[in-house]
Length: 320
Ligand code: G4F
Image (cartoon, rainbow, N blue to C red; front, side, top):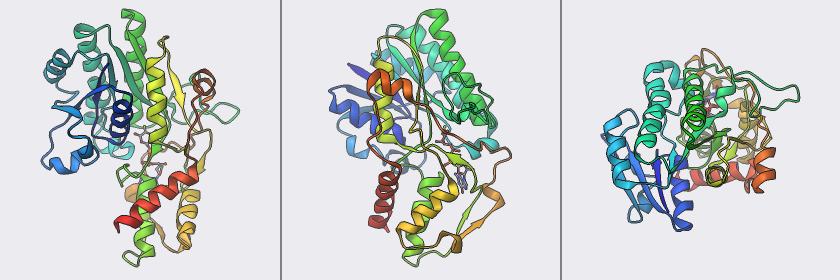
């Protein structure tokens, strides 16, 4: 079986590649050209001899066509995205081009070149915006009212995937993934930013950490667990969408408390708020109901919130 992953050099792309290789898949992936390739390819450098990568961009239809014609994949995992929500307010058009039009480019190429393949779209809990069901969870039926250019673009892509499934009878599915982290997460996302800074502070290398909103809540899982869910969703015989979440929620403030406490520090002595990191509109609360994927496939996360945070702290302790 041949898998083709856009966004292969990202956090999820790297864990998914490892997982698919373990299962005997041939893994192909698309990489966007950057001026410093070492930075971009650091997460997949250890897989260099086992995977095949191609330069391309979801915004460049000709590159997608060329690669799909050559690879003829059995499964397409569309993970490529401008993935930073706050930055999407700075670059809304680039975000929409990549996260919405880019997905449409992928779908059109898929429909024309390899319609018998399966297609997975990395959809996001950011699409819910501030909608929460009465029981405090978001699920597939929760209305979607996104509050960021990122979420709006992801919602357009989500709808395109459902549309292509219905209109053209393609096996195209969405996984609505809640936040998922790891030591491979870029350090401008809040979990890894806090873990890195707390370790720096405990080593006397930094005094303060500037953050934005401390009172938003997120449902944080581990990328390693979530790529397993992704694979189950796309290899399901029925083309249907699923939510992937832990069902637990913590505030950014609680996250700070836990991380600093694990290093024997009082977070309140080191955190300062900086306007720079406050979003023009904030998604306040996420907690996902992943009962359908748990019941249907027996999927459950192996990491707890604590074990994930401990792993990330250990990573920075080793590096700093
Ligand atoms: O870590 P974050 O930047 O993740 P966010 O915005 O929830 O988005 C992530 O999860 C989505 C799924 O819901 C993905 F689709 C998306 O690609 C990405 O993976 O921010 C988490 C929370 C926010 O409420 C933010 O306002 O942390 C708050 N925060 C407070 N200070 C900060 C900071 N976030 C960042 N990145 N940096 C700060 O200094």
